[in-house]
Length: 64
Image 1 (tube, one colour):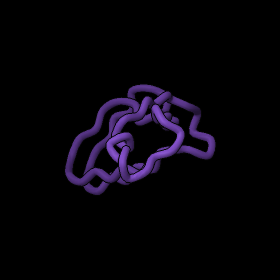
Image 2: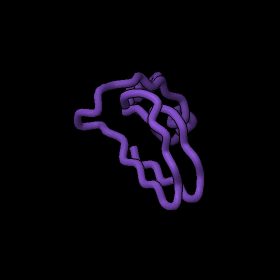
Image 3: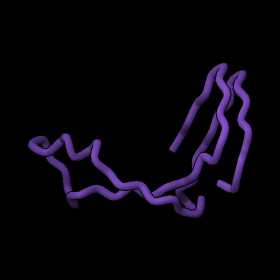
Image 4: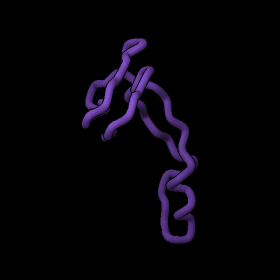
């Protein structure tokens, strides 16, 4: 996951997560399934969050 913030304020945790979809494969007839996922917070090992702050401020309120 890559997040880019420009001239904003961010407060809180930005966690890494694993997304699971309801179906195992998606084709053209079920493309709406791409937007339906359940995300579970995971340790940032091989699936971290990259955060770029361009003129922004981040207040960290917990581990991420």
